[in-house]
Amino acid sequence: MEKNLCRGRHLTGLPVYNPQGEMLGRVRQLAVDEEGQLRALATAEDNWYTWEQLLDLREDGLVVAGEALPDCMVACPNWLEQPLYDRQKQEIGLVGDLVLDKSSGKLAGIELARSIFDDLWQGRTEIPWQQLTWENGQLIWLESEKAGQTMNEA
Image (cartoon, rainbow, N blue to C red):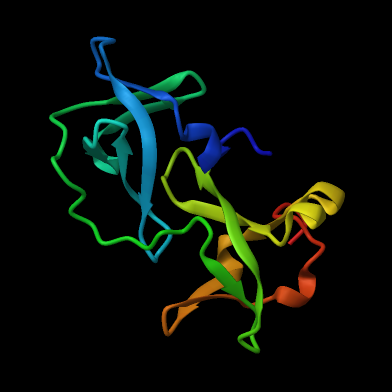
């Protein structure tokens, strides 16, 4: 995976610090809107910090500035385990994880989870964000015929 990309599951559980190094909590949830932009993150203590408050995203934790918000003010879909459909509206799996660009907070793609057996046997398929769209509340993979490709090949 490219250095500027990270998986959502790697962010979950990371400590969140203020600029003085005081730990504020641990990441519990990411709020990503339908345009694929990380809008906010929640700590286990239900404190929310917006993307604009995020100063640094490192492997050992995140640094945020400003006061926590009591609640997320952005309506965002629950991406994880969201069904994914092909162009014919046939369900082909679930969103297993998010792949984020650390510098912009934009989704670079998702991981498609099909079944435990397929995930273990073949691994998960990475789908670039540009190949996804929302239609009538459904997440559609526009190029599902490229099921074997990774984000780097597409």
